[in-house]
View 1 (spheres, rainbow, N blue to C red):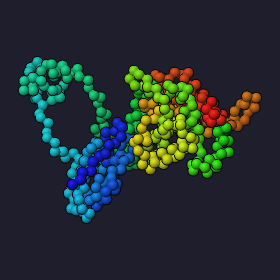
View 2 (view 1 turned 90 degrees about the vertical axis):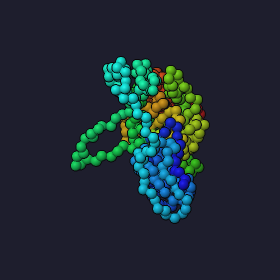
View 3 (view 1 turned 180 degrees about the vertical axis):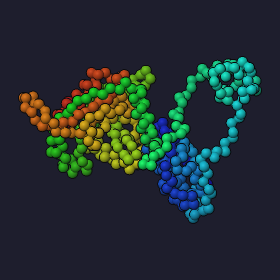
View 4 (view 1 turned 90 degrees about the horizontal axis):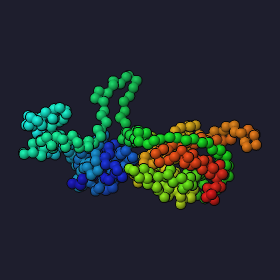
Length: 395
């Protein structure tokens, strides 16, 4: 028998959910053929058959949570369908039962009083006395020990569903999105500053060169590469926006891996375009297109979503005129793009002209970024995009 194991899931990811079995018990499989899909809080991963044979046993059904290294099932040798054993439930563990904890009546009267007065469970207290008995010192040590944060408890009795309602379990990705967004709000001293950009120069440059650009590089020239290059220029000038808070320290990052938010049917994911300071606009556009396509197809890897230093999100593609984006921890800032819309603007000579304007927003962690730095950063973005030759000349 060959075991089907849960593979390494990526940085800081220790658990996944079995979202779909692509093969059933008794079905033949080839080596490296996809047989199962796992959903983590970051991506969906395919598990391939470690050897050719027949699926002899599926140990965890769809919807089960599994840890790294868990045995999902077994493959028996042979190419024909074999008699399959009934799947075992994931919770049918044969692990030996834990030794019984000391009963309350076995406690000394003084210890029993301490346990009762503090509403403690004696079974949770490690005993160091004779024959494992709990002493007063054990109770004190138990009370003083740091307690792990309690896991969120689901409602015992969910509300009844009406005739025109439907209950659907949140995916692991959606749960993680909710958790991270709430964590950002609870942890960061988050503030947002706004500005507006006259997109005339970028639009003119794009219209003038988009056909030649696509013909030469095989990818369309979009607005995002302009924003990425403008962000890198501004990050170099204001390094705190590209930094990270680690305890009482600030980690400044002298590289520019820009996370680009992508909306997928499963939820928002943030793949990373790495080393944007040394890449051409053509390569940045290629990377964004490739990452976006893989994200929407559920094929993006954990590595492609790890290590970003700054995030750009474009709500304008959905028609958003203004928003306050939420920081993507452990990053300390995020740039929000919005819809370009013709608006009347007063020119320096007093004339009023219709110009294609875009509101931009920078949400930032005020613990590390001062208001002056945030405003300056956004002004640098504005200056670069209103005069895009600056990006070429790096001035």
